[in-house]
Length: 445
Ligand code: ADP
Image (cartoon, rainbow, N blue to C red):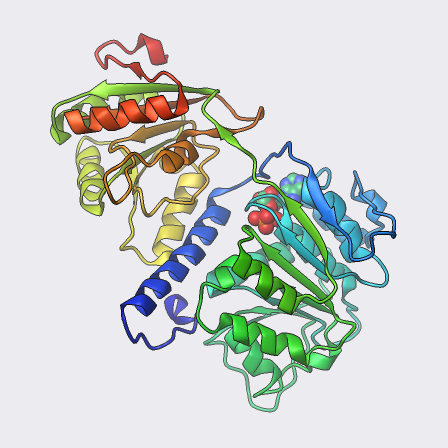
């Protein structure tokens, strides 16, 4: 049972329920982001490095060869299609692979190569001849643990002596047994039980401890304490590594409790711009008219992949239904779906099985849709007070830096109110949004 693997505290009030909701959303978003991405996020920003020992030389590598990896691992890296280390990997990898091992706290947005980096570090540090756990990796949810597990399997493809096991609720082992796998990946609660209550793992033999998605982790009640309790059982010379996509104060103080004497690497999020985007609006009088307009431009937008955003689940469901009735193949991503259902939809869309994805603002918030070149705002993004949500608008439509591909954004306007929102968005970004006549589509080619 996938949905029940993350330990959930008994809900004792609305705040708690809201918190749970929030943490589930964070974990779901993070998972969907991983699934929809098939590439590294390009970044022009430089990494910021704070060394534990500022006098020690700072190494950075431009190739995987320089790291003197085991040949089986280098082969695995190249088989994954990696040609050179990503920006964060350039500095993080030499640090993590140094002797003696160094502790690291690293922060960079999702898609910049953190997972690949710590997976490579884990695989490099295990001794396959020793048949007991040597690396522990904790993730916020079962699904996220599984994703990381897949990367370990891929990268370790030519290194089959190294074995992996999942410490997740539902994976029941016989009492008294000792694990033989070198790498254990799981959620904090089960990992803690396996180390202390059941003693399947001898924590004193652990060489590398990885805590992934620290920001998502601390959003779940109990995960913080469990992680700290695991960390306390580990030997002093165990390498501690912590990764996070964001770095607010709460994450930072947690990170410092998990990772003593850390080196710190930060990579600023790439700014998004509207510069490479053609923005249009379509003037309509009702939801039905918006639908008709959408049908008119359907052929033009499906040359590439398109995402259509609606304000409510109801509208999204209705629109997806109407489009299917017209004979169009569309996918629907909606908040009431289970995480694994949402994951399946995202994967089909990523693989191009559907050209169009209809979703709600809330459901898709935080999901990076770089590879989608057409974005339709069936409803304009507004905050809870009905004001324009500029940040969401930019994140949805904007592209990063000079690598950004050209894109197309079409906004559907159906009332004076939404025209007003559009005007305010236009003013905010100081970028013209052109009117599109859907009977004459030459403009959008
Ligand atoms: P993060 O953990 O920061 O979200 P990942 O390690 O999952 O990032 O990497 C994001 C994507 O980029 C994945 O599809 C991964 O396979 C790919 N990737 C990672 N490192 C490299 C690299 N050095 N070269 C090319 N692709 C990479």
